[in-house]
Image 1 (cartoon, rainbow, N blue to C red):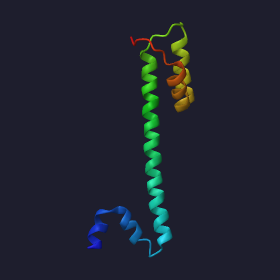
Image 2: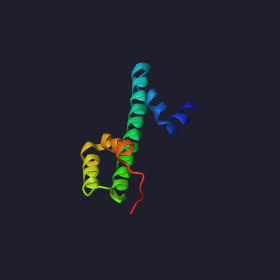
Image 3: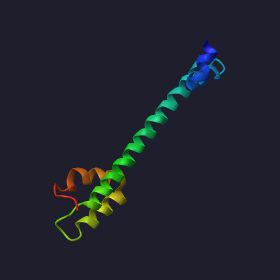
Image 4: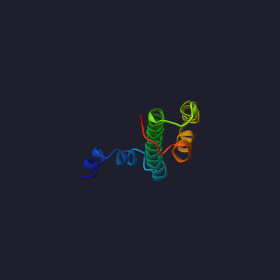
Length: 96
């Protein structure tokens, strides 16, 4: 029965193939879970960055160079620039 479960669960397979070393299996499982969490967080940040870049490109700004400056801030500062734009620079005006 355990072999059938191990065939469908890769984490259990990793634990069984560690040669009985529970610490190594535990480290492997924690490493895989942490990597997945970092990947999800990174993809969420990338999505937020793209959303703020598109939002900035579609908005009207009061100054002539404000849009260009904010796009440069978002592109050059990455996720931090997107956060700054979201909280500080995002106007309440209408989109084009």
